[in-house]
Length: 496
Image 1 (cartoon, rainbow, N blue to C red):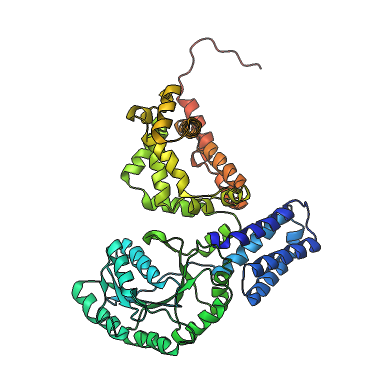
Image 2 (cartoon, helix red, strand yellow):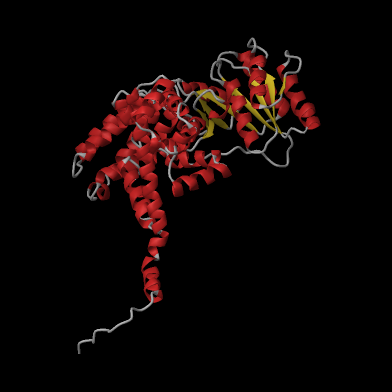
């Protein structure tokens, strides 16, 4: 989420200053709100949106129950989080594709260079994974090689592309929906239209004609997240002409300020439905306003990590996880975990989803890149099968051989062994807790860890109080006492 990196740092710095105060005064709130306003304006958020946002936050923060609470700073953070979530959309928006119509039709519109053709392929890949049979319609007949680009994407993800005569965009869309899709059994057509300018009346009219010809169930506008607050004028113009249903935010992994992305919902009332972070086909995700707000405020997206891991998990990975927990952590397991990290979007994406990690790395000037995984993989591949299964046998001579075989230094091999030892130790601790049935201890440990990493205090507290088995512990202890065989021998007489 590089596009919000600077804004995230500024907001977190503001909250850090508040945390240094035991009690908050009205002046403290005013200073914090001024810094939040400046942070949003520097991120190129529309000034009207900023004014309304800060006014709502300030009004709630100045309530007596907030200022007089035991931890007013946490209340301020909570208020800003709630308002930021509201700014981004409050609730998740879903595609409305009626089951009574086959095929369903989704039409994509947007400016030139917004990443619309790529977004069409990513959306097709996402919906294909949900059991749909999509067909891509190449209706961009104005940009050279646009149909070739879409064809290349379609071949990569295994989705067919209908190109028609390559001249009449309206005819191509109509043939794809009325003839090709029904005859070939496709239940969804994604229409990729030509990118256009606001002032390009001819191409805007073409988009209107395509809409009238195929009557799409959903019209989605693809918006470049790196566009500044001028995005407001763009989406308003498209909304007046097309009345689109939602937004796909592309290039969310860019380095620009990206404040326009925070302005879309507030100004147009249209929800952000999907966001794209990266170039790979699987980089399009359903947009969750609450999770994005947490990430902007440095609280991470732990739920997102869990969902991504569940999506990639299979029966074998579950068996491997159980074996690691019961038998220990091997170098093969470490290699497997690195491969999973790549599938989940890489180190940079995961760092942004773990509370506090992204900011800590940026403060230290550390570069988060998947290139850092390559040396580790090469060292593990240089180990023998026995060494990967039993890393404890790797002595000094073996480490020297592994370093030479992988082109790394002995010090790097030593660091890898230390990392493995830490992981194995952690697995050992979890194994001890699991074997002892200490779920309460596990929940407390996980809750404390997440609190220290910057997770929302209320959620961390819930996690810390986990312990389904712990709740029934007194009854279990009593049952165990009753089931124990009584000791034979003389018993002491009770004192009268």
